Image (cartoon, rainbow, N blue to C red; front, side, top):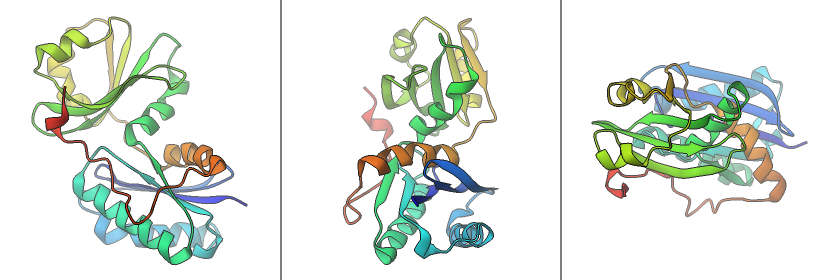
Length: 222
């Protein structure tokens, strides 16, 4: 058995999932601002109990690595590390935007490039550009939406922007005919778990002591 608990706290949504050998067993989401510190541990315990498992059944913990909310990522990482230390099991890290793109792939045609978005405050979003195979055309970065350089660098083919950064994107990108938008898409521990199993099979663990989330500062934009 390869039971993996996945934790996603990069946005206001607190999401936890349980997978066995890459197959989803159970999932819980809580849509509530600032809920992570108060409810994450109890959500995990309830999910395990309702699935007829306990902590000792877990083979690994997978964490959404960011970018996203500094506080949310810090809380999720602290809980994941605590579980890994206490249970002596490995820690797996999965990029938040990569997981979002993975979850959207089955729902678009082969010509569409995927641009998952997370609100980065002001006129900025965290995003990346990936094709249908999951290959990154541009890795995770901060996009300054009012930047002429950013607009000039956008691919000319069909693009799908989705996630909680879409409302911020629209005023800047709505006139581009090749760009489409989907607003109500949030990062989910379900996709984290699917991608984590691939790393679990390859034993791609993180160093629990030194691991930190990928916060990604706006000042890293190039």
